[in-house]
Image (cartoon, rainbow, N blue to C red; front, side, top):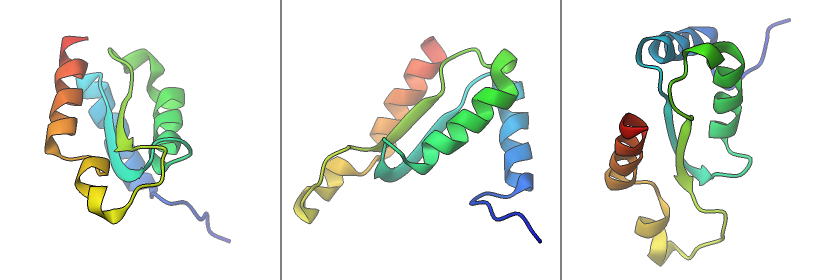
Length: 92
């Protein structure tokens, strides 16, 4: 019987190597921040790479509110939200 996960072991190893090299992690996805996929990745990296982290894990995600589709450009993480998060990670 195989293991059913949303991300494979190869992907996880690449993330761990990147965190070990840079000491930072930024996770972005369109789903709400609470209970999203980023929380699972964040907790896994926190467990495995805690001593390598030089800054808190940053998550750039959607808001925890329902939204009409007309406001989708404000809801979905874009390059500017990610850029601001990267600047905060670097200056931590």
